Image (cartoon, rainbow, N blue to C red; front, side, top):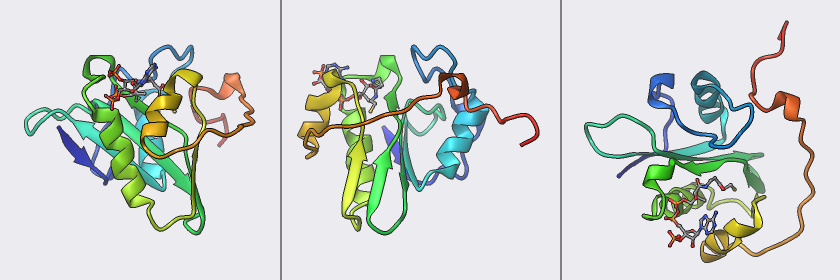
Length: 140
Ligand SMILES: CC(C)(COP(=O)(O)OP(=O)(O)OC[C@H]1O[C@@H](n2cnc3c(N)ncnc32)[C@H](O)[C@@H]1OP(=O)(O)O)[C@@H](O)C(=O)NCCC(=O)NCCS
C-alpha cells in the first residue's frame, strides 16, 4: 500500500466507490474538491501501478490549536488489513503540533479510535441532509 499526504495531483478518475450507504453521496469531482480543500488529507493507493484510491482520511483545522476529522473511509474490499489505522496514524503525525484532534463516529468505531489514543466524549451534531452531496449551490 502507498500513502500520499499531498492530494494536489489526484484526479477525480482515481476516486470511486466511496461514501458507501450514503443516500446522496458526493460525486468523485466533489470528493476530489474536499480532499484538496482539507487542511490535511492522507490517501491510500494499492501499489505502484494501481492509481485507484482505496482509502482516505481528512482533517480540517484552524492550524493553531484544533483539528477535526470529518471523513475516514476504506473501500470495503480493502478493510480489515490495517489501512484505516495507517491512514489515521499518518494523519495524526501531520497534526502533531496541535492541541486537540476530535472526531465524531458511530459507537462500533469507538474501539478503532481508542486503539489510536482517542478517548470517548460527548458530541453534538447538526446535519442538513439536503446538502449531503456537497454539490455547489446554484449561483455559488
Ligand atoms: C472504519 C474503517 C475506516 C476502518 O478501516 P480498516 O482499514 O478496516 O481499519 P483497520 O484494518 O486498521 O482496523 C479494523 C479494525 O477496526 C475495528 N473496526 C473498524 N470499523 C468497525 C466497525 N464498523 N465495527 C466494528 N469494528 C470496527 C475492528 O476492530 C477492526 O478489526 P477487524 O479488522 O479485525 O474486524 C472502515 O471500516 C470504514 O471505512 N468504515 C466505513 C466508514 C466509517 O465508519 N468511517 C469512520 C467515520 S469517523
